[in-house]
Image (cartoon, rainbow, N blue to C red; front, side, top):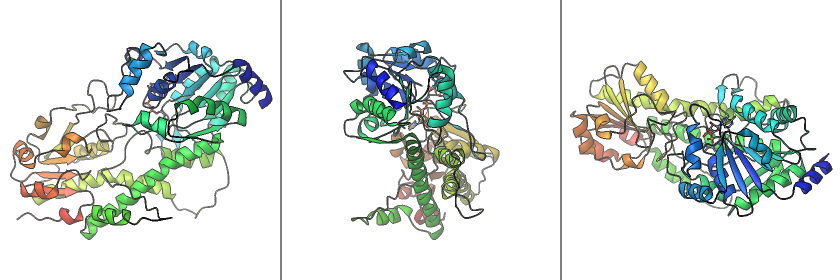
Length: 480
Ligand SMILES: NC(=O)c1ccc[n+]([C@@H]2O[C@H](COP(=O)([O-])OP(=O)(O)OC[C@H]3O[C@@H](n4cnc5c(N)ncnc54)[C@H](O)[C@@H]3O)[C@@H](O)[C@H]2O)c1
């Protein structure tokens, strides 16, 4: 089988033309970096002309990045590769047929977490388009995060069904998961090791040829497609688990009247050969496209691949339990807000809340699955008035911007009974307590810090009731 594929690839020669399907946080930097490789001749960014994302096509063809957070080097690189004629974006999927290699970087959210049902509709549409224009000897790589078993299962079936070609015989197929974090997309792609898993050795080798030229510090780690799928979903599951561990510790520290950040510094100080505590940071919750769903892809993989699982009967998986703890943090933020208000004789009902930071990452416009949203909804349900401020999320273009999102900080703070910090944006780090209090207009406003970015003593000295995640040392401060 693979001998035929090796011959077809040999006839085709080195990879010259590349297609990247899905122009989002993952696809745009990947396409720009491929286009910057001297021996890759042209890269097509394929973006469907949808109501929410179609605008990206013209922007990218002007060399502008539609990602609005700080992405060092991205705008410059796009300008360079568009100017050199090496990158163009299109909704014309027939151009896939011109490509030697096609990668898919399409969103893979979850429809129903409880029943472990992913929404693969956009990915299926993308795979169908690739299948329709697949040519012998082409390489297809899934970069999206997917349920283990998807590359060699669903993706193979769709590609074969649409093309009439056979994976591993007529075309190469692999999974090379993206391991980037918003805010450092280019650096991460260049410097992180790249997991590359083909459905066979020829597919893996062709995918290694595609990714090696963009790596500066990272190296390629080859494995099977299914092992690559498990690696990706497990690495995010572990990160979520580590955040849950420190969030639970933060809740304990609050109950025990101590500062979780002191404990964190103490635990992290233990270093030495074989010692890895790797303690992360607690906070107001976990958001984004990845950590909120990848645990469910991993859990579902066990079902999809159908193996027998030996596990304590009736006990929830450690990973989904961790998800539940992280999902609880916005609710805890509301309890802190409620208890702060109670100290000055107020209730959530009728109070005005200034919610600062809608994006889930500091200094970024990425607001997907933001933990600020369940907080806002619960506060509204309790009868509070909530005004949201974020200097990064664009109310005009972000599909995740809430109605009424404001960029006027003074206006949002004006008349607020409680100021609730959900994101550690740099704009909030310099908040001047006396100025915030003046804008709130109360003798004793409440401040709730979900990211430990304000100085509790300075706010208390200025008259605030302070509450903070993990700040058991300060949360018990009583009003005299
Ligand atoms: N955002 C991250 O930091 C990150 C990191 C690692 C992995 N991932 C994974 O990478 C994948 C993509 O994530 P993202 O953040 O780039 O998503 P995104 O939503 O930012 O981008 C996806 C893009 O694909 C487009 N699209 C959807 N269906 C299409 C189709 N059929 N044809 C052409 N275009 C289509 C969308 O319109 C959108 O522009 C997901 O599986 C995600 O879990 C994301």
